[in-house]
Length: 174
Image (cartoon, rainbow, N blue to C red; front, side, top):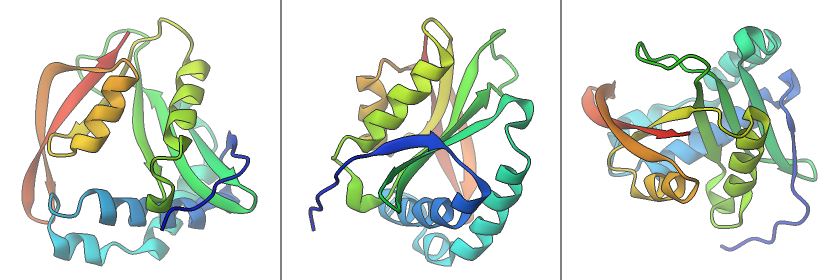
């Protein structure tokens, strides 16, 4: 079902957003990673457990310069992004990393991810080097990142999800 999304607001996340973020996180994983991540793993994702973890993270505030923002339309949380200092051993001085950017699947294709990405990049500032990791088999996300100026830098890693090693590719911009 294609839904109408009116005015989208992007703002810093608060602890009150933990359940909404967790729900988006789980639904997005279940939709985006179907056929990539084992079905049993995706079915077992628990929004309540994720909400507890998000509540803890958000209660810490922007510790270590980690920031989470949300996109909402009225009272409905549509998506979120988290970013902060790059965590890779070979990260360049001042490099930042986008840790996550997820949308409720019903909002895909409405420009909400674009708005989140533009906000993140604006807050980081022009010329700031930014990296992120994406599953190699996630063609939709890879295309999205390329449209925003990210390119694979040749670094890959295996990430185990549900007992399966999945290839991730690092993208960089700036």
